[in-house]
Each structure stands twice: as structure tokens, then as C-alpha cells.
Image (cartoon, rainbow, N blue to C red; front, top):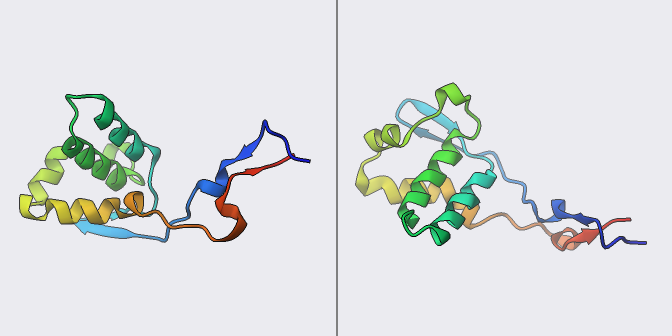
Length: 116
């Protein structure tokens, strides 16, 4: 018997392969997509003073900082000093790729499942 009061959202959460990137002398683990990435893009849709460009840079920073100790987080200025404008789109596209193109689960797990 299933319960309408319990939905298994694990069926919607993709599993990502290990991914890393290097910027300057730093290596970053960008394997997962933290919730904050989606939040900044939602903010860009509701806050007229917060642009999609702002959201893209902030989402990239969230991805880069996700596995780092708060004392070692990189800032927007750190990123700006190391990535020339001509490479920014390539870097952000690579870092945010799993957000824009999440892996798809196969089989019955792809739909929401209700449990007893």
C-alpha cells in the first residue's frame, strides 16, 4: 500500500561522476551541484537588480567552493584575476555543465515513487 503523504525525491536526484578542474594553482572538485546553484538562477528571475550574468558567476563560485573549507573559499575577485574575459564563457559552461545537463536515471526510478 502506498501513502500519498510520502514521496521519495531520491528518484529525482542524479548521481554525478567525479569531476575536477584547475584554475591557477588550485584544483577544484566540481562533482556535485549544490542547491545554491539553482537558487541563484531563481533569484535572477525574481530580482531585477540581479542579472543572469551575476547568477552565472555566483553559481560558478558555488560549484568551485563546494568541497572547500570556508577559510579557503575563492571570491569573485580571485576568479576575475585568473580568468580572462575571453575564456569566461568556456569556464562557466564547463563548471556548470552538470547543472544544465544532469545525468538521467534509467528505469523505474526516474518517476516519483511513493512508499508506505
